Length: 417
Image 1 (tube, rainbow, N blue to C red):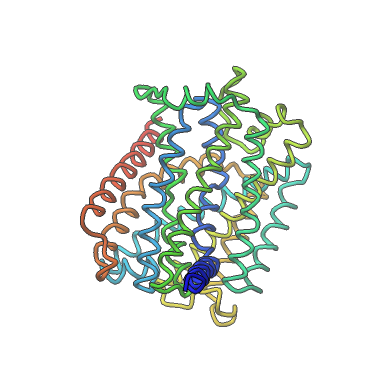
Image 2: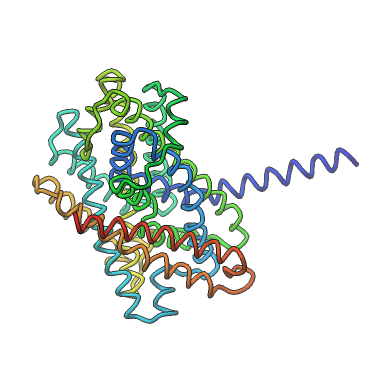
C-alpha cells in the first residue's frame, strides 16, 4: 500500500511538472522583454547615481509585477479574448480605440528604443548601424513568417536567456555585502531626483504593452482554466527572474561607478559598457555586456512588434495570430513587417531619437492609470470563481493606485524638467 501511494505521488508530481513545462512561455517571455534596453539603462543609472539605495525597490517590484500580470493571464484564460477585445466588449469601441491607439504609439517608441540598443551593441564591436539593422530585421521577419507561435516563443526564450549574463557581470564586479545592506535601508525620500528614479524604475518594470501581449499569448497558446495554476507559476518565475536581472545591473554599476566616485548619467549602451567593462576586463566585459543587452533588446523587439500587430488585428476584426499563414492573415503580418522595417530604417539613418525616447517614457507613465484601471475593472467582471473580489481586490486596488500614481509623478516630472 505504501509503495502504491509513493508511486501515485511521484506520478502526480511528474504530471504537474509536465503541465508546467507545456504551459511555460508567455509569462517568461513577457518578463524577459520587460528587462529591455530602457530598463537596463534605468537600472544602470540607479546604481551609478544612488549606489544601492534603489536595490530594495527592485525586490519590492517583483510581487507587484506578478499581481498585475496574474490578472492578465486570468482574463485571457477565462475569457479566451485579447485585452483590446475585452475593452471593446465591456466599454465600447471608442474606449477600445483610445486605449489601443496610445498603446500602438508606445509600442512603436519601445521598438525604436530596442533597435537603437541593438545598434549600440553593434557599434561596440565596430559593426555599423545599418548592417546590424539589416541582420536583425531580416532575422525577425523570417522568424515570424516561417514559424508558429510555439517556435517564436522558444526563440524569444532562447535569446532572452542571454540576459542572465548580467548576473555574471554583477558577480564579477565584486560587490561588498555590508555597503549593499546599508544602502538598501538608507533611503533619501525627500530628494526629488531620487523620487524621480523611483518612478522611472516603476515605469521600467510595469509597462502597458506587457498586459496586451501576455493576454493575447495565453489565448493564442490555447491555455485553459486547468492551466491557470501552471500559468501563474510561469508568471511568478518570470517576475522573479526579471527583477533579479534588474538588481544585477544595478549592483554592477553601483559596485563600479558608484563605489569609485565616478557617478553620473548613463543613458546609452556605449556609456554603460564603458562604465562596467574597465572593472571586468575590456574584452570579457564587452562580450558579456553585449550578450546581455542583445538578449534583452531582441526579446523585447519580438514582443512589442507582435503586440502592436495583434492588438490592431483584434480591433480591425482580422486574423491576428502566428498560427495563420501569411496569406491567411496579410494585415497581421503586414503590420508586423512594416513596424520592424520602418524602425530599422529610422535607426539605421542615424536620426536623433533622444527626444522621441523621452516623449515615449512620459507617455508610458501617463498611460499606466488607463491600462491598469481597465485591467482592474475587467478582472472585477470575470465569472465566479475567477472574479477579482474580497480583500484581495482591495490589495490589488491599492497596488495599482500606488504604481499608477508614481508613474504619473514620473511623467509629470519629465514634462516639467
